[in-house]
Length: 492
Ligand code: DHB
Image (cartoon, rainbow, N blue to C red; front, side, top):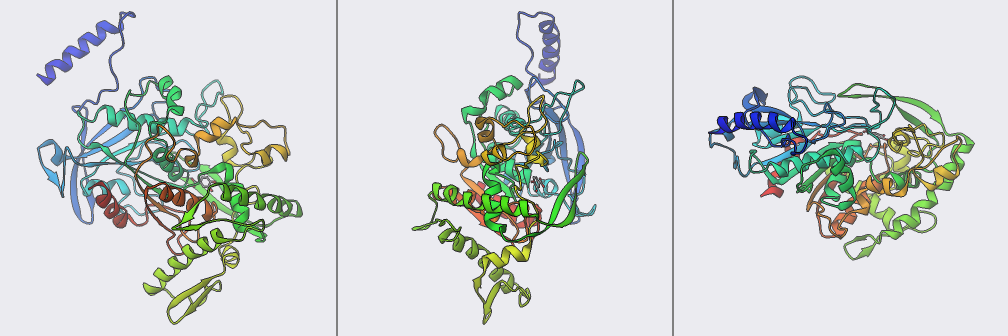
C-alpha cells in the first residue's frame, strides 16, 4: 500500500506540476524509503544505521547547505530498542558543524572529529551508539556568494536555516523515528552560539518572514535542550566584555582564520603588542561593560551581580569563583597547580583567584575591538553584511570610530543573532535545559559572555549546567561521555 501510494504521488505530482493552478507536491515530507545503510564502530562495537539526506526547505537558496543528514539506528525499523530508547522515544541529537560563522555542511558521521584521529568517535557516532536519532543540519554562512556576486548567507541566514531544519523534524515527527519534542542541539564556537540562539528563540515570530520565504515546514522550531561549547555569542556586547577581561594585557597572540574548507577552519596565531591607539580603544570599551552588565540585573542566588565604574564588584568576584571551582576540581583530580601564579592554594584548597592576573596568565588573543573591527576586518563584520555589502559595523562604538567608509547593520538584524534578547521573551519557547562549556584557557571571547548567558537563563528558571573546564582551550565535544550522560538525564 505504501509503495502504491508513493507511485500514485509521483504520478499525481507530475500532473500537478504541469498545472500552475494547483499547489506543488510536498517536498518536505520525510520519505523513509530513501536511505542508504551504513555501519559505524564506537569503542570496538559496530552499530548499523540508515542514512538519509533531506533538503529541509521547499525553496532552497543553496541545497548543499540547506540540507540535513539523518542517521537512525537500524533497530528502530524492526520495533527494537537501543538502551532505554525506541523509535518513538529516541531523542534527536542535532549537531551543527558551523565554525567561524562560515557556511557549515551537514555533519557526516563517517568523518573523524575536528582534530581527532580516525578512530576517535565523533559526537554523531556516540549519539547513534547511545540510541539517539542524529539529524545534522547544514547552514549558510557569511562567505556564501552566488554567480552574480550576491551574498546569501549573511545574518540571520544561519539561524533561519537551523530553525527550518528543526521545523522539518517537527513536521515529520509522526513519519520519522525519534521524538521531535526531545531535540538536543549541539555546536562549538560560532556553532555553539547558533545552538544557544536556537534554544533561546524557539517559535519567536521575528524569524517568521525569513522562514516563510524559504518555504520552511509549517511547524514549531522550538527545541528541548541546548549544548553549547564556547559560544561566540552576544556579539554586540562582546567587544566591551573582552576589554573588561583583558584590559591591561597588551601582548597578544592574535587569531587569523587563514583558510577554510567545508569541514574545518584553519586557525593560526600571530604575536604582537597593542599599539597606543589600540590601548586607547581598550580603555574606551572596558567601561562600556559596566552599564550593560548592570542592566541585566543578574543574581547569584540572592546576591545581585553588579560592577562599578572601574569594572570591579560582585560580578567580577563571581567570575573568579567559577575559575576557583574549576581549579579545585582539577586539583582534586590530581593536577599540579603549584605553578599557577594567579591561584592561592592552601592545604589542597583553592582559596583565591586573582582575576586580573588570570587574564594576564591566559593571555589576550584579540586586538580591540575584538569583534566589530574598526576597519571591518573581522569575521563578525562580514557576518553582518548584506547581499551586496560584504562587511558592516554592528556596534555604536564601531560606527562612531570607524576607520573606513562603512555602514552599520540595522538593530533588528543584530538582535536576531543575540540569544540574550529572547530568553523568556513573550510568545517564545526558550529551551528548558542547557549545558554550556567554556574552557578556562579559552580567549576567543570573554568568559563573561557565557557567564551572563548562563546566569540569565538560571535567573529565568531554566535548568543550566554551566562549567569552565580547567585549562581547556577554544574547542568542543571533548567530553562526549559526560555530554550524553547529561542528555540522557534531561530528556527522561
Ligand atoms: C569562531 C572563533 C572566533 O574567535 C570568532 O570570533 C568567531 C567564530 C569559531 O571558532 O567558530
